[in-house]
Length: 334
Ligand SMILES: NC(=O)c1ccc[n+]([C@@H]2O[C@H](COP(=O)([O-])OP(=O)(O)OC[C@H]3O[C@@H](n4cnc5c(N)ncnc54)[C@H](O)[C@@H]3O)[C@@H](O)[C@H]2O)c1
Image (cartoon, rainbow, N blue to C red):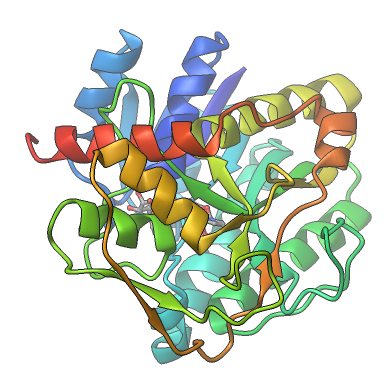
């Protein structure tokens, strides 16, 4: 298949590019490089041995998107391009509606005009809002707690409406849990520009000596060690989930909505310990009060992805931390 990756130079998109090449597909990257380094395509070429076709531009630019879809004779699209900072979304909701919802509408309209109806969409466990069950199955109640989450939920609902109105649409909705880690080459990974909100990039900055200690927000939750529990998934496993999703759309001719997680909850302290192991020294941490809005635990029921896509995560927590640390060493050199 010839696949367009919007946001393909970003964290998850670049890993998916590697996985698609390994599976023998042809992938084209569309990105405005607002949150990706200009050197990513060159590094992807070194990892895969094929120079990626890159189209630099904005997914909200209809003429540009139509031209790219046509020129590259695209069969299917994986739509990653979006803004993703939850905190920022509460301050600049219109920016989020514009990029995440506006971009989605522009893209899917262009696809429909050109007769391209296979779409894989980057959704998120955030569509479960405050989860009302554990582990979380795909039938759990959906909701949102911030404008970023709202954009993901709206796009999911648009996919449902589009598919109901026109059965030619065959869409895979992938609800990611917490993607972490980096490619085994250590040449691509997550590169947060500011102080990260998410645990693993925060720990990585402490390990690199850029932040003094890990703040552990709350140690009195109803969990095994009292700290918050999340479902972390290695980004290379996640990338493979996209390959399987595309192949399932092609094979089954029907869409799917699945969780991509491991099904295993990992606590903050477990993560700090595993990262300490990876970087070879105990990482300092301090217990701080709970953060408003945080929940005790959140992890997926991954069984539907296994049934529908044949997907299961293979990498361990230690793999996630080791690969993140290796990427951190490499990233200092580029
Ligand atoms: N990383 C996570 O924790 C996580 C979790 C759940 C869902 N997601 C979703 O997965 C997708 C990819 O996330 P990521 O972590 O790789 O983010 P990322 O920021 O690394 O990648 C997004 C890419 O899209 C590009 N982009 C943004 N707006 C664009 C626009 N208007 N036009 C063209 N390109 C644009 C950016 O330059 C970047 O390269 C996003 O839709 C995100 O919401 C991410």
